[in-house]
Length: 283
Length: 306
Image 1 (cartoon, rainbow over the protein chains, first blue to last red):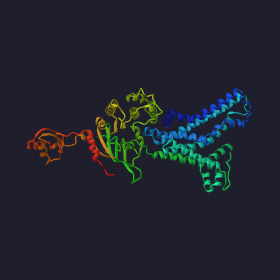
Image 2 (cartoon, rainbow over the protein chains, first blue to last red):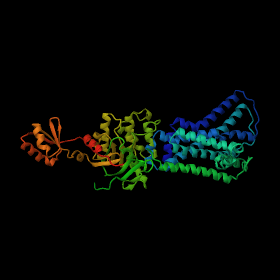
Image 3 (cartoon, rainbow over the protein chains, first blue to last red):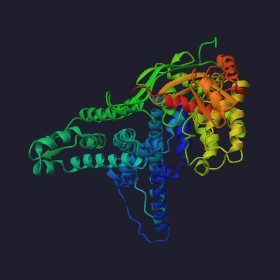
Image 4 (cartoon, rainbow over the protein chains, first blue to last red):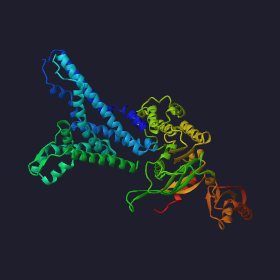
């Protein structure tokens, strides 16, 4: 398994376009903070006092990316290339005879999760250092109470909340890639599914009011959108996300229900991906 | 062949599409290949060679039948493929990686063979181009890299699909020597498909001819060429000779010669008839067809029911 994982890493790190999808977050944040520090050093920004929660919140902005649509589209693009690229390059024929199909797919999942974990953790570290450097450059006083444990607690919670959307997106995109055998098709399907899921979550009550409550209500409960946000709310606020439907009532679910729904989606998509690939003819 | 076969196919079939309305790409293919053999799988384009090979290396699953490698059923024990090296479709590689890096990826996937990369690149004549990206390789270079990839895991069975496609004359000769060397010097078993009869004739011990998805002949090359295809006769006057033989065997004219559809054992009787009819016999030889003619006659005759 480790050798299959290292083979995946070796091939992907040479594919610049794919590689850049992973490392664009730390690179982008580095550039932003370099500019911020430059502005501070040039005296173009006035010193300001931030409260501890505001300061901490700034350092944790990165963890909002996996949960929003744009972040998920980028993750889906990477997953689509990793899985469907093998069809485009016709290289399954090269590697399938040498390793069980299950381990080949497992290695791809492992690579994606490890790379994004490293990428986001690195970006979080860059954010903390970048904001500190910006404040030093501008001359803003650092709020009192910044300790390693405070930072770890906040980033730990935020990263935990960010995991679920990443995993669900990986599930969508990998299954679409294996079913369609096309990077573009997998990306388009992932974008469409993610967008539908987000639209239903964001505008569920309004859609139910104006269109079909009997359709929107079960979709709202069945799709991962609400449950991802609800899990995030439980982790960050310690309470359920309350959404009022004017037609049907209030959605306010325990974290265990949301975890079960998200887990079901993950098991369904990833399990289907394994099953599809195990039975698939590679012509 | 006294040892257990290295490769054994029993009624292997592949149907694409729905049952009933599906297309049978391969039908009831049965053959066996012994250790150290170079076995040729001959057939015209679209005959089912590549489909059979893909079933052999686990890329597609058979609709029916069984493929056994080293005595183990491929369907229940696919790990046996770790002893197999293969080249299909002229070598498929990551175009953005160099030749060497592609072999490194394969070695890591395979879980070994990395120490053989340099020697193999040298063996297939790609050492100088190993750092170049594969997208810049010619068809022949990809083919050579494909052979290197097939040999990377030091396999006991090497399966090559059209290995000389895209190679120049010198490359073909080198490939021929390499394939023979695999069997003779290294004791490996080679199963190769080709539509190039000359190549098969040069390197294979036995061949199976596949046409329209079914095997229509399996034998040694020598046996294939030794078929009783008639006798070639040069005699004069030709009309008298033809009249003397036509009452007994089918006779065709071939320029100034006659082709008599008689067996080699009937040659003395043919000679006696000619002399008895007052014809002068100058030459009587078995009609020798080359492999191409044999192949064409076999594949054209064969039209198994769908």
